[in-house]
Image (cartoon, rainbow, N blue to C red; front, top):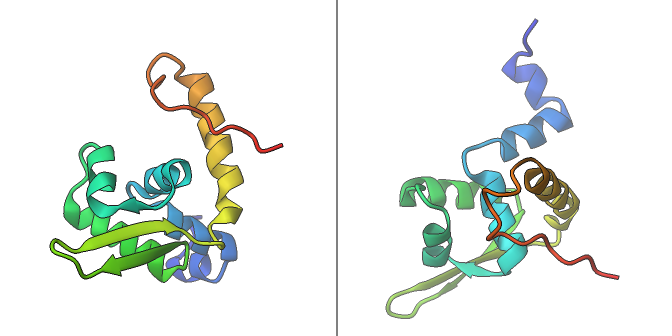
Length: 120
């Protein structure tokens, strides 16, 4: 029997999965995890095929969830930078594990993305 929307939203795991399962969400987090704070335009260039509208929606949703922070500088043109918050650090282990699986499953397809170096 499928879970109702009400039962999913009352479950912490369901709430988190709903937040993270949107289109491009994990990829946005992965880019910010590897590159550090990144401007909107640079994010858009790194995510081939994403529209400005979808990127904006995903970033706003992650900011609202306090996973990302947004810095706005009123220059011409305006500079908007996004970065990971302290709260997002809990997701780093998951992102790194997904990266390890991706490199194992698809080793020839994405050699341009390096795994992060472990901190010792």
